Length: 209
Image (tube, rainbow, N blue to C red; front, side):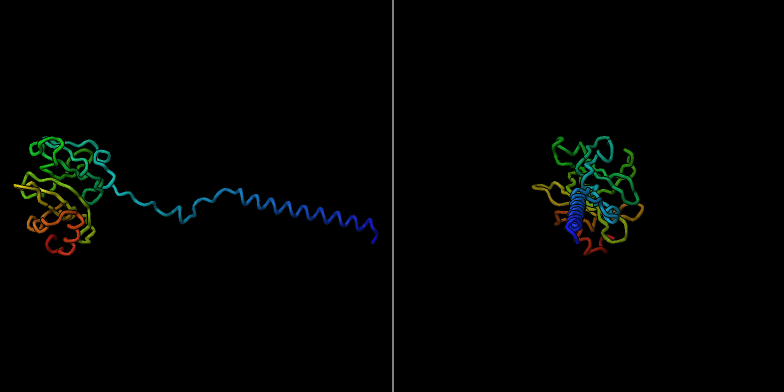
């Protein structure tokens, strides 16, 4: 092979090598600048974590303007209530103006109701055995007896001669209304939180259902 042929082959080899290097660089650049892929189909189909409406409703923001004559709306103890038999309703707590010293007083004379579209559709039975100097401190919605219906736990207090004392109640959901048993509720008098009430009721279902 003469020198001219060898020189031509050398030039061709250099050109081929350069093209290969440029191609590799372009592929690398494309990989480094490609946009991040979106969520996978599985991630896109996965439902977001549900928000606890009872913890975020804040009363009026969900239930709308509600009022009752002679009553004070208790915002902190009023919640969205999307459970049978009152789906799309609101669990609303009122206090009695006559029982409260002033607006800063605890919500004495607490009563519970279901409202829909700012109209009262249901009154819960009295939770305090006819005593007026009582108020709610916590409300919880739980299916206590695993029958598929949401029950209501009310943790409250009543004013005694020297100090306040616990006054709690459980409202059993029958599918048409809520019932409560004063004799069973009396057994909750030493408990101070809705969690403690729930634990007791689940251990003694026959007393409440």
